[in-house]
Image (cartoon, rainbow, N blue to C red; front, top):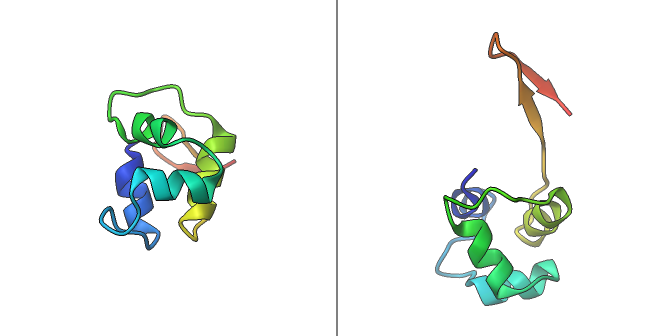
Length: 74
C-alpha cells in the first residue's frame, strides 16, 4: 500500500494537502501521516486509513484477493 497515491487519487493533491493539513482533517498527527506515506511502513490501522480516506473526501474499501486473483470485498 502506498498512501500518497491513495489520497491523491481521491481528490486531494500532495501540494494542496500537506501531512499537517491532512492530519488535522483526519484527527491524527502529521507524523502518523508521514509514516503512512512511507512505502516501507507496514503497520497500517484500518481506523486510521478510514479517517484519512474520509479526510480526502473518499471512503476506505478493503479487498481481499484469492489465489486465483479474484476480488472479494470485505
